Length: 168
Image 1 (cartoon, rainbow, N blue to C red):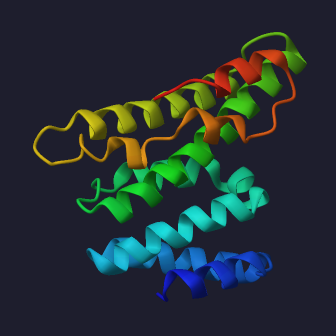
Image 2 (image 1 turned 60 degrees about the vertical axis):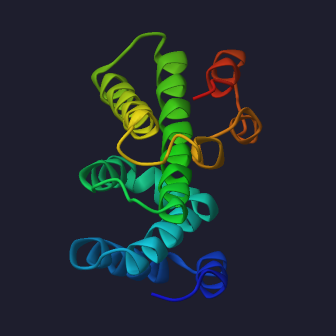
């Protein structure tokens, strides 16, 4: 992978084909590398999710499963990028669940699956922050999504606005 500045530049101006290629490299890196390479892969993934909402929409289930399938990183930089990715995915998932529920005025199988994914993300964040084997508790303020970050997301309904203000 490349340094964070190069990654940001590549991701911001990338078209769909380049994003798909970068994502392929990210998945390969997670499968074959450790530590520094994973740190860069986590950062690149978080930037893709922040900059390209279409990517988050088209692959949200795959992305959540990928991240949940990885062992939580030990270093704070990787953990921060991992949580940024989870935050973006959770906001997207909650918005989609609320949109489906409001539009249909009922809970469907699709929204139940999306709800389950949101709770898996919350569980991962809680387990990581409660993990006493590592020194993550001291840095939890650095990596956990904050109220201000959650408010940044656009909300289309009062109900979604309330959910997005949750603190972790």
